[in-house]
Image (tube, rainbow, N blue to C red; front, side):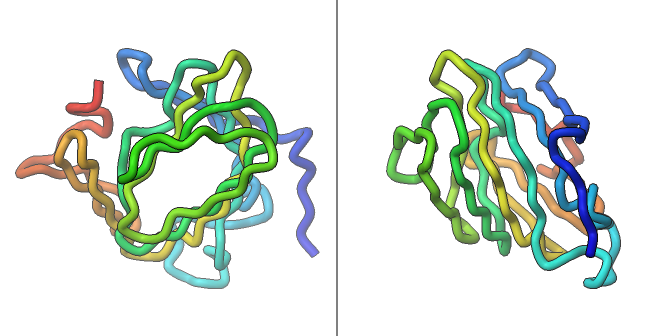
Amino acid sequence: MRKANTNNMEELVWSSPKGKFGGAGKQVSEALGRKPFSTDLMERHPFDIEILRIPSGKAAYPYHTHSAQWEFYHVISGRGVARDKDGKTAIEPGDAFIFAPNEPHQLINSGEEDLVMYVVADNPIGESGYYPDSKKWIVRCPERAILRSNPVDYFDGEE
């Protein structure tokens, strides 16, 4: 058995250059031995688990799709909105929802306190994605490259 205590785990913190996007995550699967860049399925694990924390007023990531990845979310605390192709839906503690491949989505903390969620994703090898707002693609091979006609920064065209 592999075991990790999430109370003792450090958060991986990120922020975009202009501050529109930001968050923090506890990489539970990696603490349990997942090797995200390995192509060996026994080292990748069949799913990836993260405890995601989005500060008030921030979006965790730009609006995007995944070509093959499924993402499941369960809200633990805080309030916000989930943006999808139909608009914005309020989310609160206890809400669980899922995005299938090719469903555009974005999570935004519209509340006063941190928005905290469990995230479970299958992270398939060769996954790619599209950012509708900035019209760019991300290609994972298994490292990532952001492309238009030339490589661009992850947040290019988003802020």
